[in-house]
Length: 456
Image 1: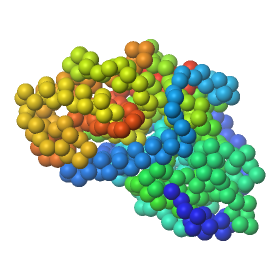
Image 2: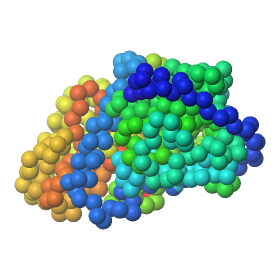
Image 3: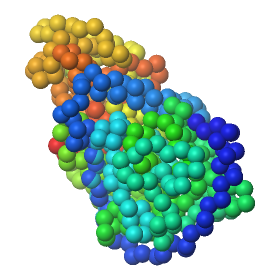
């Protein structure tokens, strides 16, 4: 998290004001390819080092989620109509924005990223998509304090004809605290609105609240996109340029696009092994397929930004776990940035035992590797033949029917582990288990949907 020392330095920033943003004609749809981070360099990855990176980033990700939850007591999650959101987001059409979605391994991150353009003329940047945060930011010149290494050149606001910094008196500045959980500040002598986006793993971005043209494709543009122009950016962001926030706050990318396209989005996360075919879409039409089976979206008025759902049943080889129904009565979050699914101890213990009972008939057990303790001697390709299907079922009957590619990973050479781990309190549905499913977030109707076979 940002310290007062960093904030003190940033209060001295005086950024050059930019020209007023131009008005551009909006188009009918938005869609991007989404990439897995392992794309383009998976052949040279050492299994052990790759797994260690996953565990390190995942543990830090959990700190961020727990930090967010700790800021607001989420003791009760209930169904919500989200009337306060949907009443302000009436789309002018029912089409969608479609954006290619990629794995983040090639940019040193355990998350998924998209390529978007910023400024006029647009320059393109690799941006992590994050359902666990609302605020969007990227690193900006002159990097007054610090910018980490990134795969793309750092954005320079001076090169954009449509860049505009936002003042402390702007309505967008007054929304910063809700989006970041931190109060904004004013830069000395310039009236620039200074944001602090801090995360529970001590990562942070601090800079100037800004507005510019966001280009999805040549014909898909958000002309007045509000984001943070980061001048001090430190933490586990890999070599990404920044983050696109998709949680439920009015400064998120989702909310800013929803006036035209509708308050909904979907994605299909490509697998780590192949990394192709992922798509990220914003718009009502992206969640309208009859292939989706829906479960109610859960929320808490004290912390409405994260996406909750209610886990009701876990089966292993079509047999439900032998646990009391009360074991499922825990907050359950679905998250794009966590890799390995976490389950509270009673559920995880029962799942581990049922899974091991089946797999151990053909493969010898192996010692635990870091956070994973359901491990076997053998490569994933060999062990997969003995892996039973696991179902995660949610309220209303929607769920994930998981095969070997979603369930196991190589923790070190010759050792394959179940890609689930124990937690103390929360259930978190990670992206390993979501891979190749189309996942729909229909916020206007307060529901989350799943459809198999969404991408390779």
